[in-house]
Length: 114
Length: 114
DNA sequence: TTATATACCTTGCTGTTCTAGGTATATTAT
DNA sequence: ATAATATACCTAGAACAGCAAGGTATATAA
Image (cartoon, rainbow over all chains, first blue to last red; front, side, top):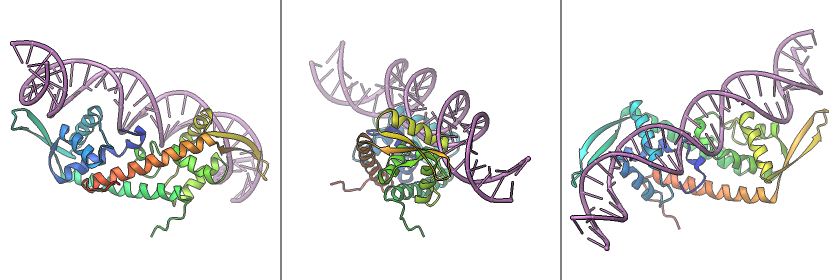
């Protein structure tokens, strides 16, 4: 990424899952799509992405299938499973809570939660 | 913390620095203050905090002094230096960009950045 | 007198990202 | 034709941050 690598930790999985919510994608495409959607802020490295994909598939959160591109090149597409969708929902909720917590601390601690 | 530990990575330093922007504090107090300001969402562990403090002091971002509490116990207070303030400002800017980037990806990539 | 709260610290584990490689095919430039 | 680049997948090892679990010591509460 372009900034403190640490910030990315913990969000990488969520970002990947969220990409697959809209459409099946292959790895290389996810990197491009992540850059596009973030205005080039997120430039995920392959060494980061592929281990994430393999782990999620191993845990049953993603399913993969091979499909030939019009060019003739073979691509490995990933699809979000029901379990993956549940994981995404959980990560998203965690992210929102975290975001709120950080902003609350940064602003001195006066946030009115519920 | 209460959630995916990974999310914390990269933010710990910023949160600590931001606490010290308002007032000098000692370690134990920072943990309590962080919990208070975040409605108990952030329960930073001592094994996380002390290495952060030592690193920031080593880098000249914090300065420390010992002061006796009314109870007789000695406390080690930390003060934000000018260099620490600059670091905080940078971290804050990074955090905002990151936050915006994540939300942009989560919402499909349509954010209008300036 | 024992347990808990306060207050500081460190070592080693784990998990996540990145670096830096490797393989192979398709396209573009020379 | 040949070289360079883009596409597309992968992995091993380094680096780093947070955590668990320990240690030390004093003050307060049971």
